[in-house]
Image (cartoon, rainbow, N blue to C red; front, side):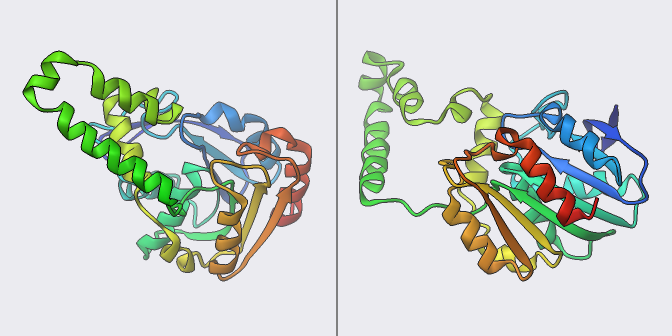
Length: 256
């Protein structure tokens, strides 16, 4: 199914027919299909909607690089279009980042009952001395290689160097989505966590190397009403690695 919101086409799946809406936001590089079994389970109680974020799955890319704020504003309208007064939210990775930003908007047209953040992004990591030096070298080298004589001699040098430095998510993205990712990772949402007023479940893998467990502990401390459940041995996709355990935790929190 699709909706046109603010000129953007948003593809989504819908499950169940409960009296309260439950919206799940997937992470970067993923799509709605990743949460199909979880959505079907939650549909015992809720009307569950899982959208493809713009630029993923069946939802077209935005016309320009989107900030987290752009996504938040668009999907507030998307949620509101279903006409529910109460909504619960779940977000994995980038989807969690969006939820944090949604609460920062204020004056929402719906009440958020509960929140589940799964290996969520939003805490900007502090760079080590080695990382800072590496970045300085890269920026300096890029300036040198951009000079006409070097650019002519080594036309692909900057692109090749950038690919070696970039993550798989970055290297596999289009130019618009690369800029979108840069906007996200350069924004620290730590100060926004206090705005999450709904009871919040944090579900995390203790071996997550993308959004480490230390991020979850910061969120647990900063969010007014939050509790943390840790999957031992779990990675950044903890909800997939032990889905039965994740669903037991979700059932308890959401009272299913």
